[in-house]
Length: 86
Image (cartoon, rainbow, N blue to C red; front, side, top):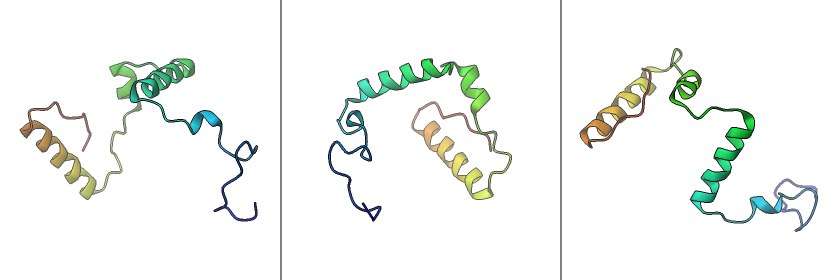
């Protein structure tokens, strides 16, 4: 195992856990994510999401323009735009 590009043999302690190698459905993945969030005490509410949201104080002008463009496209498509600060 001298080089990082080598793949460790199956069952090796250096290899990834078996659960990470098995494909899962999106529903199962989301179930696991929700369970993990609950385990960590992360509330799944709009208030909690807003508290964690990046307020954009250090955004570049390019990123601000991109966020405005994304908002306009969503509105033109009749979709609710993602809340963004720019």
